[in-house]
Image 1 (cartoon, rainbow, N blue to C red):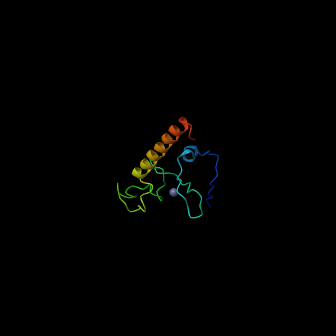
Image 2: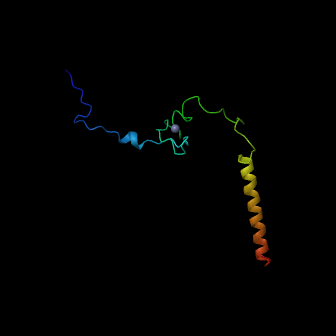
Image 3: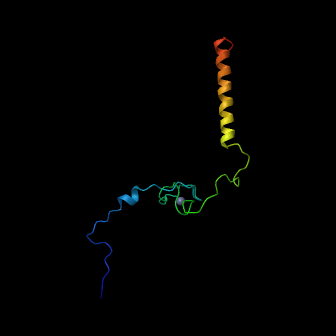
Length: 96
Ligand SMILES: [Zn+2]
């Protein structure tokens, strides 16, 4: 009878595997996925890292209200800068 011994004297080097980038996709229980990410990607093969997966460039499938588009963010940033500049002028004039 042949006895299979899975734990022999050979020391397995799994360090590179453990050092690999991990998938950060949120799972159904709220934690990160932690599966190894596909090379050159941030996600694992099951969460959008696979070749051919994901939406085509510039698609609007997930666009709900446009509040987080680049244009909207830049607009808010410019408005905040304008308000800050106005506040500084008021402060320098002694109105605030
Ligand atoms: Zn994943």
